[in-house]
Length: 270
Image 1 (spheres, one colour):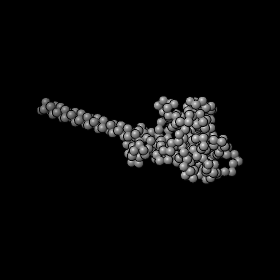
Image 2 (cartoon, rainbow, N blue to C red):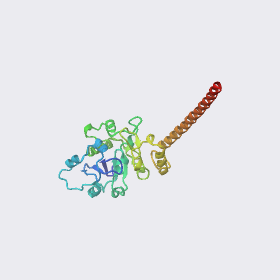
Image 3 (cartoon, rainbow, N blue to C red):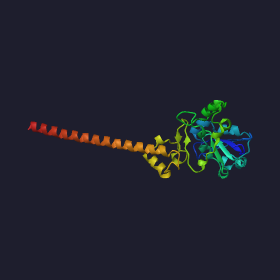
Image 4 (cartoon, rainbow, N blue to C red):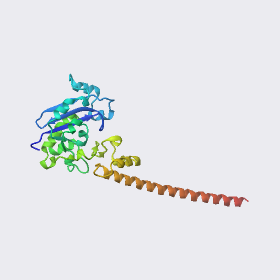
Protein backbone atom coordinates (compact mmCIF):
# COMPACT_ATOMS: atom_id res chain seq x y z
CA UNK A 1 0.00 0.00 0.00
CA UNK A 2 3.08 2.26 0.13
CA UNK A 3 2.58 3.58 -3.40
CA UNK A 4 -1.16 4.12 -3.01
CA UNK A 5 -3.01 7.01 -1.41
CA UNK A 6 -5.50 5.94 1.20
CA UNK A 7 -8.31 7.86 2.85
CA UNK A 8 -10.03 6.78 6.07
CA UNK A 9 -13.70 7.72 6.08
CA UNK A 10 -16.46 7.65 8.68
CA UNK A 11 -20.08 8.72 8.19
CA UNK A 12 -22.58 9.46 10.92
CA UNK A 13 -26.07 9.22 9.50
CA UNK A 14 -29.77 9.60 10.16
CA UNK A 15 -30.29 5.83 10.17
CA UNK A 16 -29.33 2.81 8.09
CA UNK A 17 -28.20 2.78 4.45
CA UNK A 18 -30.20 5.14 2.31
CA UNK A 19 -30.66 7.73 5.05
CA UNK A 20 -29.14 11.21 5.10
CA UNK A 21 -25.53 11.88 6.03
CA UNK A 22 -25.30 14.09 9.11
CA UNK A 23 -21.53 14.13 9.52
CA UNK A 24 -18.48 12.99 7.59
CA UNK A 25 -14.81 12.80 8.45
CA UNK A 26 -12.19 11.82 5.89
CA UNK A 27 -8.48 11.68 6.76
CA UNK A 28 -5.79 11.15 4.14
CA UNK A 29 -2.59 9.26 4.77
CA UNK A 30 -0.90 12.68 4.73
CA UNK A 31 -3.04 13.77 7.68
CA UNK A 32 -5.14 16.21 5.64
CA UNK A 33 -8.71 16.22 6.97
CA UNK A 34 -12.20 16.87 5.67
CA UNK A 35 -14.73 17.18 8.54
CA UNK A 36 -18.23 18.55 8.00
CA UNK A 37 -21.76 18.37 9.38
CA UNK A 38 -25.06 18.45 7.52
CA UNK A 39 -28.79 18.70 8.08
CA UNK A 40 -31.06 15.84 6.99
CA UNK A 41 -33.59 16.51 4.25
CA UNK A 42 -36.31 14.73 6.21
CA UNK A 43 -37.20 14.31 9.86
CA UNK A 44 -34.59 13.44 12.46
CA UNK A 45 -34.40 9.78 13.44
CA UNK A 46 -34.61 9.44 17.22
CA UNK A 47 -32.84 6.07 17.12
CA UNK A 48 -29.91 7.66 15.27
CA UNK A 49 -29.79 10.57 17.69
CA UNK A 50 -29.54 8.10 20.57
CA UNK A 51 -26.33 6.80 18.98
CA UNK A 52 -24.60 9.88 17.54
CA UNK A 53 -26.29 12.74 19.41
CA UNK A 54 -26.69 14.75 16.21
CA UNK A 55 -29.78 16.84 16.85
CA UNK A 56 -30.54 19.95 14.80
CA UNK A 57 -29.16 22.11 17.60
CA UNK A 58 -25.95 20.08 17.78
CA UNK A 59 -25.41 20.18 14.04
CA UNK A 60 -25.95 23.94 13.99
CA UNK A 61 -23.40 24.30 16.78
CA UNK A 62 -20.86 22.12 14.96
CA UNK A 63 -21.33 23.96 11.67
CA UNK A 64 -20.72 27.32 13.28
CA UNK A 65 -20.34 29.98 10.60
CA UNK A 66 -19.71 27.42 7.85
CA UNK A 67 -20.89 28.36 4.38
CA UNK A 68 -20.65 24.91 2.78
CA UNK A 69 -23.71 22.95 1.58
CA UNK A 70 -26.41 22.20 4.12
CA UNK A 71 -26.96 18.71 2.70
CA UNK A 72 -24.20 16.18 2.02
CA UNK A 73 -25.48 15.26 -1.44
CA UNK A 74 -24.91 18.85 -2.54
CA UNK A 75 -21.35 19.11 -1.22
CA UNK A 76 -19.12 18.61 -4.26
CA UNK A 77 -16.07 19.60 -2.24
CA UNK A 78 -16.08 16.13 -0.68
CA UNK A 79 -15.81 14.62 -4.16
CA UNK A 80 -12.89 16.94 -4.86
CA UNK A 81 -11.20 15.91 -1.61
CA UNK A 82 -11.49 12.23 -2.52
CA UNK A 83 -10.36 12.47 -6.15
CA UNK A 84 -6.75 11.38 -5.56
CA UNK A 85 -7.65 8.46 -3.29
CA UNK A 86 -6.71 4.95 -4.33
CA UNK A 87 -7.78 3.07 -1.21
CA UNK A 88 -10.94 3.55 0.87
CA UNK A 89 -10.53 2.52 4.53
CA UNK A 90 -13.39 2.25 7.02
CA UNK A 91 -14.66 0.16 9.92
CA UNK A 92 -17.67 -1.81 8.65
CA UNK A 93 -16.87 -0.46 5.20
CA UNK A 94 -20.03 -1.80 3.57
CA UNK A 95 -21.99 0.79 5.53
CA UNK A 96 -19.74 3.78 4.84
CA UNK A 97 -19.07 2.84 1.21
CA UNK A 98 -22.81 2.92 0.50
CA UNK A 99 -22.89 6.66 1.28
CA UNK A 100 -20.11 7.62 -1.13
CA UNK A 101 -21.25 9.78 -4.06
CA UNK A 102 -21.30 7.95 -7.38
CA UNK A 103 -18.47 10.14 -8.66
CA UNK A 104 -16.21 8.75 -5.92
CA UNK A 105 -17.30 5.13 -6.42
CA UNK A 106 -16.53 5.46 -10.11
CA UNK A 107 -12.85 6.02 -9.25
CA UNK A 108 -12.60 2.26 -8.70
CA UNK A 109 -11.38 2.51 -5.12
CA UNK A 110 -9.80 -0.46 -3.44
CA UNK A 111 -11.51 -1.16 -0.12
CA UNK A 112 -10.02 -2.17 3.22
CA UNK A 113 -12.37 -2.88 6.10
CA UNK A 114 -10.71 -2.73 9.51
CA UNK A 115 -13.61 -4.76 10.88
CA UNK A 116 -13.58 -7.62 8.37
CA UNK A 117 -9.80 -7.71 8.36
CA UNK A 118 -9.90 -8.49 12.08
CA UNK A 119 -12.75 -10.98 12.43
CA UNK A 120 -10.60 -13.26 14.56
CA UNK A 121 -9.79 -10.85 17.39
CA UNK A 122 -13.13 -11.15 19.22
CA UNK A 123 -14.57 -14.63 19.61
CA UNK A 124 -17.91 -15.26 17.98
CA UNK A 125 -18.59 -11.87 16.41
CA UNK A 126 -17.31 -8.93 14.42
CA UNK A 127 -15.18 -6.52 16.45
CA UNK A 128 -16.61 -3.16 17.39
CA UNK A 129 -14.41 -0.16 16.64
CA UNK A 130 -13.49 0.11 20.31
CA UNK A 131 -12.60 -3.61 20.49
CA UNK A 132 -10.32 -3.36 17.45
CA UNK A 133 -8.73 -0.24 18.96
CA UNK A 134 -8.12 -2.06 22.25
CA UNK A 135 -6.58 -4.99 20.40
CA UNK A 136 -4.10 -2.77 18.52
CA UNK A 137 -3.40 -0.43 21.42
CA UNK A 138 -5.02 2.60 19.81
CA UNK A 139 -5.98 5.16 22.44
CA UNK A 140 -9.40 6.79 22.38
CA UNK A 141 -11.94 8.53 24.59
CA UNK A 142 -15.06 6.38 24.93
CA UNK A 143 -17.22 9.51 25.13
CA UNK A 144 -16.11 10.50 21.62
CA UNK A 145 -17.20 7.25 19.95
CA UNK A 146 -19.83 7.66 17.21
CA UNK A 147 -18.44 11.07 16.35
CA UNK A 148 -17.25 11.02 12.73
CA UNK A 149 -13.87 12.65 13.37
CA UNK A 150 -13.05 10.55 16.43
CA UNK A 151 -14.11 7.33 14.72
CA UNK A 152 -12.08 8.15 11.62
CA UNK A 153 -9.01 8.90 13.74
CA UNK A 154 -9.42 5.62 15.62
CA UNK A 155 -9.90 3.70 12.38
CA UNK A 156 -6.77 5.28 10.93
CA UNK A 157 -4.83 4.21 14.02
CA UNK A 158 -6.10 0.65 13.69
CA UNK A 159 -5.29 0.53 9.98
CA UNK A 160 -1.75 1.79 10.51
CA UNK A 161 -1.20 -0.75 13.32
CA UNK A 162 -2.49 -3.69 11.29
CA UNK A 163 0.08 -6.06 9.76
CA UNK A 164 0.46 -5.69 6.01
CA UNK A 165 -1.22 -9.02 5.24
CA UNK A 166 -4.44 -7.70 6.79
CA UNK A 167 -4.46 -4.64 4.56
CA UNK A 168 -5.30 -6.57 1.42
CA UNK A 169 -8.20 -4.83 -0.34
CA UNK A 170 -11.53 -6.62 -0.69
CA UNK A 171 -13.07 -5.57 -3.98
CA UNK A 172 -16.03 -7.91 -3.47
CA UNK A 173 -17.75 -4.85 -2.07
CA UNK A 174 -18.20 -3.71 -5.65
CA UNK A 175 -19.96 -6.91 -6.81
CA UNK A 176 -21.40 -8.60 -3.74
CA UNK A 177 -23.84 -7.16 -1.23
CA UNK A 178 -22.38 -7.36 2.24
CA UNK A 179 -24.19 -7.24 5.53
CA UNK A 180 -23.91 -4.46 8.05
CA UNK A 181 -23.58 -5.12 11.77
CA UNK A 182 -25.78 -4.01 14.63
CA UNK A 183 -24.55 -2.82 18.01
CA UNK A 184 -24.31 -6.43 19.23
CA UNK A 185 -21.96 -7.38 16.40
CA UNK A 186 -24.66 -9.41 14.63
CA UNK A 187 -24.97 -9.31 10.85
CA UNK A 188 -28.01 -7.46 9.57
CA UNK A 189 -29.34 -6.71 6.11
CA UNK A 190 -27.78 -3.43 5.03
CA UNK A 191 -30.14 -2.26 2.29
CA UNK A 192 -33.78 -2.15 1.30
CA UNK A 193 -36.97 -2.90 3.18
CA UNK A 194 -35.29 -5.67 5.21
CA UNK A 195 -32.45 -3.49 6.42
CA UNK A 196 -31.57 -3.86 10.07
CA UNK A 197 -32.90 -7.42 10.32
CA UNK A 198 -30.79 -10.37 11.43
CA UNK A 199 -31.57 -13.69 9.77
CA UNK A 200 -33.06 -15.03 13.00
CA UNK A 201 -35.52 -12.11 13.13
CA UNK A 202 -36.96 -12.79 9.68
CA UNK A 203 -40.40 -14.29 9.27
CA UNK A 204 -41.37 -16.58 6.39
CA UNK A 205 -42.40 -13.73 4.09
CA UNK A 206 -39.17 -11.82 4.75
CA UNK A 207 -37.07 -14.92 4.12
CA UNK A 208 -38.82 -15.47 0.80
CA UNK A 209 -38.28 -11.84 -0.15
CA UNK A 210 -34.57 -12.05 0.65
CA UNK A 211 -34.06 -15.30 -1.28
CA UNK A 212 -35.99 -14.05 -4.29
CA UNK A 213 -33.32 -11.39 -4.69
CA UNK A 214 -30.23 -13.20 -3.46
CA UNK A 215 -30.12 -16.80 -4.67
CA UNK A 216 -26.56 -17.75 -3.79
CA UNK A 217 -23.71 -17.00 -1.35
CA UNK A 218 -22.06 -15.08 -4.18
CA UNK A 219 -24.92 -12.58 -4.17
CA UNK A 220 -25.15 -11.83 -0.45
CA UNK A 221 -23.02 -12.48 2.57
CA UNK A 222 -26.00 -13.53 4.72
CA UNK A 223 -27.31 -16.14 2.26
CA UNK A 224 -26.31 -19.18 4.31
CA UNK A 225 -27.77 -17.70 7.49
CA UNK A 226 -31.08 -16.98 5.77
CA UNK A 227 -31.21 -20.53 4.37
CA UNK A 228 -30.76 -21.83 7.92
CA UNK A 229 -33.58 -19.56 9.05
CA UNK A 230 -35.79 -20.88 6.24
CA UNK A 231 -35.13 -24.45 7.35
CA UNK A 232 -35.84 -23.48 10.94
CA UNK A 233 -39.18 -21.91 10.00
CA UNK A 234 -40.13 -24.93 7.90
CA UNK A 235 -39.29 -27.21 10.81
CA UNK A 236 -41.36 -25.08 13.19
CA UNK A 237 -44.22 -25.08 10.71
CA UNK A 238 -44.08 -28.87 10.39
CA UNK A 239 -44.00 -29.26 14.16
CA UNK A 240 -46.92 -26.85 14.47
CA UNK A 241 -48.96 -28.89 11.97
CA UNK A 242 -48.27 -32.08 13.87
CA UNK A 243 -49.37 -30.45 17.12
CA UNK A 244 -52.46 -29.06 15.44
CA UNK A 245 -53.34 -32.47 14.02
CA UNK A 246 -52.76 -34.08 17.41
CA UNK A 247 -55.02 -31.54 19.11
CA UNK A 248 -57.73 -32.01 16.51
CA UNK A 249 -57.49 -35.79 16.87
CA UNK A 250 -57.72 -35.51 20.65
CA UNK A 251 -60.71 -33.20 20.44
CA UNK A 252 -62.44 -35.58 18.03
CA UNK A 253 -61.85 -38.53 20.33
CA UNK A 254 -63.12 -36.55 23.29
CA UNK A 255 -66.23 -35.57 21.35
CA UNK A 256 -66.90 -39.21 20.45
CA UNK A 257 -66.59 -40.24 24.07
CA UNK A 258 -68.89 -37.42 25.07
CA UNK A 259 -71.52 -38.61 22.58
CA UNK A 260 -71.17 -42.16 23.85
CA UNK A 261 -71.56 -40.93 27.42
CA UNK A 262 -74.67 -38.98 26.52
CA UNK A 263 -76.10 -42.02 24.73
CA UNK A 264 -75.43 -44.26 27.74
CA UNK A 265 -76.92 -41.68 30.07
CA UNK A 266 -79.96 -41.41 27.83
CA UNK A 267 -80.39 -45.19 27.82
CA UNK A 268 -80.23 -45.30 31.58
CA UNK A 269 -82.88 -42.60 31.88
CA UNK A 270 -85.20 -44.56 29.62
